[in-house]
Amino acid sequence: MQSAAAPSTLGFQPFAGQRIAVVGLGRAGLPAAARLRDWGAKLLCWDDGEAARAAAVAAGLPVGDPAAQRGFPFDMLLLSPGIPHIRPRAHPSAVAARAAGVPVLCDADLLFRAVRASGSRARFVGITGTNGKSTTTALVHHLLLTAGMRAEVGGNLGPAALGLELLGNDGTYVLEMSSYMLERLQSLRFDVAAVLNLSPDHIDRHGDMQGYAAAKARLFDRQRPGDVAVIGMDDASGSGFAKGRAARVVPVSGAAPQPGGVWAEARALRDDQGVLADLDAAPALPGSHNAQNAAAAAAIVLALGMPRNAIAAGLHSFPGLPHRQERVGERAGILFVNDSKATNADSTERALASYDGVVWIGGGVPKQGGIDSLGPLFHRIAHGVLIGQSASDFAETLSAQGVPNEVAGTLEAAVPAALAAARRLGVKVVLLSPACASFDQFTGFDARGDRFRALVAQLPEIV
Ligand code: ADP
View 1 (cartoon, rainbow, N blue to C red):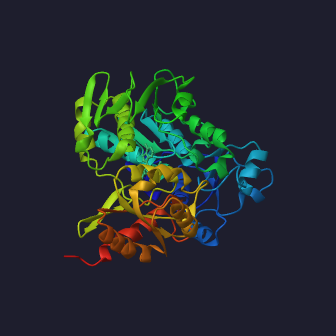
View 2: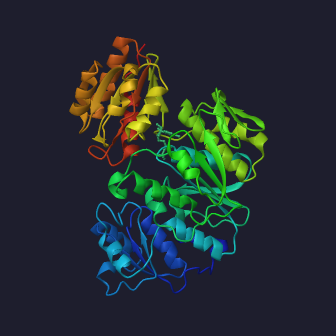
View 3: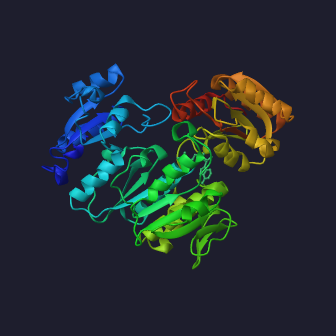
């Protein structure tokens, strides 16, 4: 990022003379490379895509394939999180790096090195889990800002770590960490690390659940007794993560009391000292999953020294994130909810649990197990409208359980069909919560959600 030449970083060269191979020159990789160059690194940049390489050349970056260099002559490989370094197939640059004993890193690790090299003791918060990472990360940032604390937010939810400002001693970085990023840390120590939950996801990358859990547990690596480990206790993974931590463990839950921790009890968020906030006054945090996110966020900001009496106001004013049970419109008293971020059945389960009856729009590229695990919530689906690759499979699953449905194929067809079904059946909510990845029809969950929002906006007003 050229703007790294902000006053505090002028002449700052934390990577002077270090040889860094940068592979993956997308939205995050390209500015990261430019920033590392400004910070003194000797770079070689690469992307398998020709257009990305051309953009790097245009930005004046040295471009070449590091895997083709004899002996992989680099001190580190900065590999874009989207590019596998082990499974399902390691990228050639990662293979070459491993053979040469060169560490494969993510940009958060390099940010940490730069911050420490600047002499700053800014604190680092890392947040991971299968679901709820982005919401909790954004919420922690929002809480800190409402309390007048200096903080930068980014990582997996964007902006990328190397796009963030350098902060001084009073600053806090709030980073959403994907399991892919966690596997690529060497230096970063989190003052506060939070794991929310764990359910099957990304198994193609991690081999099995054990591998996935091990990647998540790396969030706690290098933590010391003065640090804090916030651990979600609402699924079976929690007690495992809590064991053997060097840091102080703070358990959190959206459902059950956690002595020594933070939890929600009938929508009252509390800790051992008493009530922190009424979650019913936080419109962007519906459902018990969000109660868990709120509990984790509160535990994190308390660990950072935020005054407890400032927490309620921050939770209540949280605007929420797009594509997570986002209310995008209303027609004829029917609410349209965009939960496009629900790319697995577990996420869709949370959304279905939040409403008594819905017309459900789902489908896309299914995850292992499809929607079988949603069976206990099928009674909340008055009608299913199915799209994407999994449409006919999901239709079969629903029909087998007696849930009326139709295959619409595309979102364009699904939105008006869902409105018609909701009116016919007297249902008050149309919920897009696909339980699937979007890549068969969209560039990502955000493009899918944006399209849904636009389609809802195009629906005729009904009087
Ligand atoms: P992530 O960044 O981990 O993918 P998000 O905060 O973007 O998580 O939320 C994605 C979806 O996951 C939400 O729409 C919701 O359905 C579900 N979800 C959110 N928080 C939780 C949680 N704590 N436990 C289980 N599911 C959750």
